Image 1 (tube, rainbow, N blue to C red):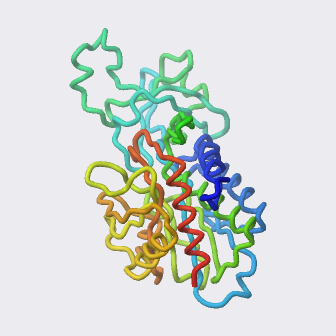
Image 2: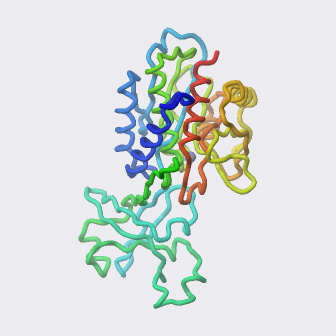
Image 3: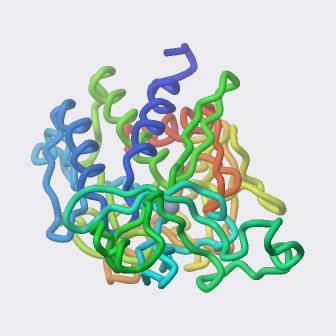
Length: 352
Ligand SMILES: [Zn+2]
């Protein structure tokens, strides 16, 4: 741990990598939720699951503390796909889980998780993948559900032999995250959205335990499992919670203030503005504590807070997170943004 770091940046970077390597497309999250539960339980948090599989972690002492509860939410489900059709060629057509452009998965390795056990690997390709066969047709091809398919690593040339291998319509498909930590402090991976933020919550829980931080309000962590399809935190928020801070990646790119070295407080996204007072408090805490931060707006975006509000929860909501370049494509972030985000969350949880 460096002196300037409260939650250990290297630990959060490596935890991010560990989580990214566990397949968890939306709807197929049980394994990764079990792993996160064990990590949080080791710090004495009381873990419960909602009926639909979200994880709620309560800090000890919640009964002794007075007043309005605080909840930090991060989602552990990721983009992915399901088998839509087994084509007569033995290739698979896909249906997407979550919002991404078909072009962003072309060439990616993938795994088919067979419904009744076992896995088959494959590669996402276009139907005209060989330039020696198709020439210019490949560059002109629109990437969509018709032109993107999976070539399975099976000696199977037709649909019947693929079915005989146990692959079925409706099997989950996960994308190879190709997770890599560089010597320069970056992590390159698919699914940093939002596993980096689940890793931040684990880092914050570590810091609270190690530094014996006194929490001023009943405090909960919520790990949601259906955020990418729009109902992450729509149920299961504990009674008494009045503030939810969604911890989710900041969108880095042209026209954005967010970057890979800071934490961002997002004050508006596609679902509307976030709570003015809570956002202001987070911005003030970041300034007062010398935390590298940005204030930004994300156009094509919604969060666990948007989903809780839409579901009818009467809460104040804010959104903070580390800057992720190339979001919902091939993503990258820097350790520094994990550290700045963790520092801001700790400052918030300690504040009155
Ligand atoms: Zn996200």
